[in-house]
Image 1 (cartoon, rainbow, N blue to C red):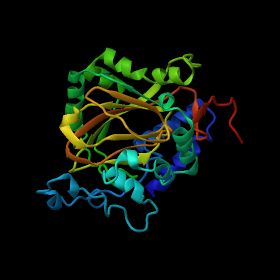
Image 2 (cartoon, rainbow, N blue to C red):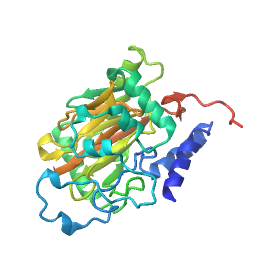
Image 3 (cartoon, rainbow, N blue to C red):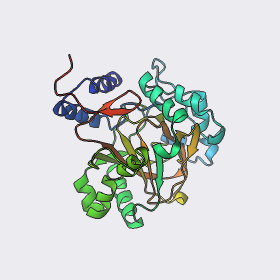
Length: 318
């Protein structure tokens, strides 16, 4: 089924050894909305076909549950440790981050890479917060765009059965909506992280290929995103909502030996390498909006070996 095709795309990506072939695989990965390594969760109310009557009149954060979305025969189940964190039944700073990473439903190489990030790397070298990167007016424009297009998208995420509630947006469309200067600033954000990871001396030119998506979270549709890693070199998560606009929906990263919550306000950016395990806790009220940008270097293929890149060889491997 779709899950098997998705994992086939992930496995085959590392076997291509020419930029042209890599571009084909990149196009395939776009079809699956960048979540080839996404932890598959149980949905809140039955695999995307939600019981709207059950939602009517719901009050209070205690009513949110993570039950009954994935069919019984599937191997993708959320662990109790993760369930408790996503529902805030256990404080994020009391959770066992290593157990949560080990419990992710993804390939062993991705889990190993996330564990290396969690246990062996300094937090400042794998994740960074950049305040006030986008203006309030730019954030408002992107929220309106998400309301128009992401809300109308009926697609169910193949990995966790929730409504995708997202829309991909190209660079030219971003430029039209928020202007060239803001778009260009977003497109070179990975260089901030590269500078930290190479002691101030990036080894490669700051040229990046990026894809972007707008995403919405709300109690009536997609509520949360379970722990997973991204298959791209690095990710920028731009907060488009004031923190007062929703409850829940906290961004958690498994870094520096534990889970960390990254407080964010409208226009702030959280930038992290793709191998960082991360999640969004359940939104209990209001609507949470985010702009996600996924970055790769042209001519470099992702190798699931500690989450590093290598330059492709001149001839295909046998």
